[in-house]
Image (cartoon, rainbow over all chains, first blue to last red; front, side, top):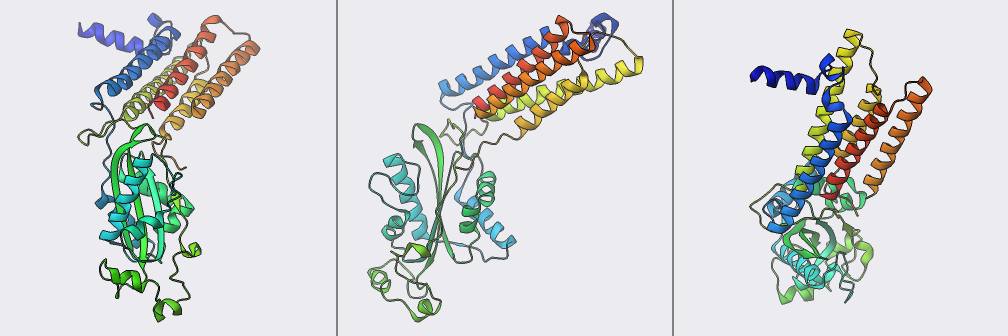
Length: 314
Length: 54
């Protein structure tokens, strides 16, 4: 029994007179069966994830703490001071996220009532001198999200700006434009006069129209209508179609499909290399395709599939 | 979608190259064509299913 299994495996993966000097795995019939199995398996996984509503679906591991930690890590690496988590900015970020879900839009400005991000800074009583906003959606973990922001010049400008002192982060699950997703809103800000505006109060509204000498001295206006002082708005978008709001699970259909694809291609590549070596050593003459061409094609596919990322920049 | 199309184009080019290469060498055989075709189809299926699950 064991000897039979050993023989079958040898025929499957190595050239031999019994398999006409070509591993069975590289035969058209078996490659076609493999393609059919993969097609059915992946479709099954996707359908199962949709039907069960998330058992194999996707769940985001992103947390406010992680976004803050990675943001400050990047800032420290760049020689910048850490950002402080501000309750008012966090409130503004949550309001912005709620607004996006309520009005079902994916943009910095609400297309229905033209509310800009600054509206939420005001609503949360954060009297800003500088303000900025980064958005992200459909990312599975925090690291790719922050990396995507870093890779985009306009987002990096916000993340690594020396002008900001505070940040507010909201990580909210919901259905946006028909897609269940995790939305991340990160707001950046610097108060007009941090010392004079310790808390949200009516006084802060008065003080915003009375710039301090320090503010004037820095040649910056406190007039919030002057958008030239505001950092560029930045949106990060991922094209993933996330399918889970349950934070219990963390395996996505994408991860499964990619693992299957890469494993299959790696196995074929290994078999091609073994086949090439044995045929070369045995000086076998046979009727078969070019192994180096197969290997080149398979390697290209591996690079393509390995490079696929859930998160994309919009 | 664009990635799947790119993979399909690469697979078609790979198949075409295989046929032309073996035809010029004088050892073109249906078995060889099927070998290239099967690997090309498998490649497209792998890319398609991965992209589809995004």
